[in-house]
Length: 206
Image 1: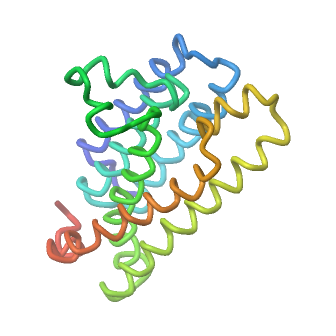
Image 2: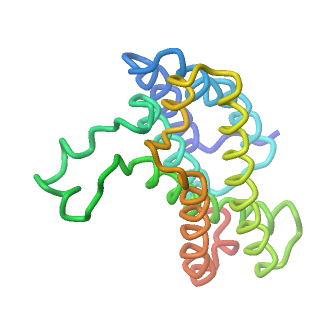
């Protein structure tokens, strides 16, 4: 089994550090195991998987950035990330934001950041042509987005209304699930031309 790339070892270390930081002082601690727990469980699996099925540092970096965004959001249960405290005064008002938009950012980022590693996986391990790998990556984003929203719906049946609302982060928007899936799909579609133009599958060792 090949050794883990040094850069990817540092990426895993960053995620490992982010797990307790995300859980520490979480505003909805009863939901922490739902949002941070899966990352903790999959971290050792990621270590073994990256050794068994290597990917490029830049693809691993895409995954790492998304996971760190998720951990930041989980600390404030997505709906209460205080991004306005670090942005110019009136930022949200200038764009007409009437809700916390960090969850929308994370869904959009999922679409953007999932395309490169999934294209690489499709070419490298699925023996797909680049065009088919792009289609596979887009379908992956759409499928995962839909399945996650179904999971959130199922979760509401098991949690208290307060905890379910805090986890789902719909913030009173009855079309929250559809918008989240739409933004993930939009991010994926916007990322595809850049991945294709960069010939991502030709730089797998980068």
